[in-house]
Image 1: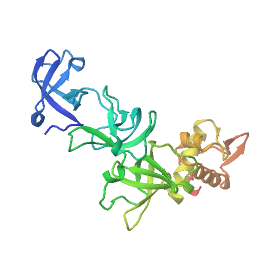
Image 2: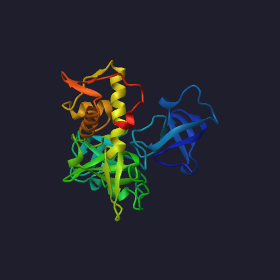
Image 3: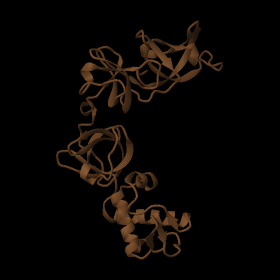
Length: 289
């Protein structure tokens, strides 16, 4: 079965002046325009293409891959906005993706970045986007383990912190009081399951808790010191952004790891950086830090 809004493996049926027609099975013949047809395209060849509708609402195929497909979430930029029709989003194809006014949460303006879910509208059979993402997320009890590492996309800012889409399936919460720097809507990053409540709501964190967070981080800091001849230009005054960019942890976790190394007399702070007090042999004594 060929799916609208997804990539499909389709067989070439016949050439035509505007391109070649592909066997769309349940959708009928689908045109692949000439600009996507290479010399290797011959009758009966199978092509991996994305199927959507063009500006005249005709089914067409492309060898290009959009930024998001039907059934997925993404953060897209509005390139045009109409107060009655809705906003048009850049999804990486020549025809922009419609976010209808009825599917918006607040008015979307040109230049706005919005987190949306993309789907095929059953009424119009067109691919559209919606900002009503909670309605599209899993309603079943999550099966994640406590402290399991998961992939997150920041969806919205709330008075408590940020909501995040977990593994393209569930919604969780990152508490603002536990973050060392602001996050960006649409930002994708790794996080951890902090707790799954009895009602199914999920609390998240950007770092592992306790010793399981600090022990690997002290090792990473020692490895960096050894690799850079005993000194790194980081200390407890470094910016959260710089720490996240180098070690992929929060400033709070980094300071805790530095404190553990300092108390173990493995490092010292000097001239805006951190220095190794003695050579470190790989994993030696890391469990004692």
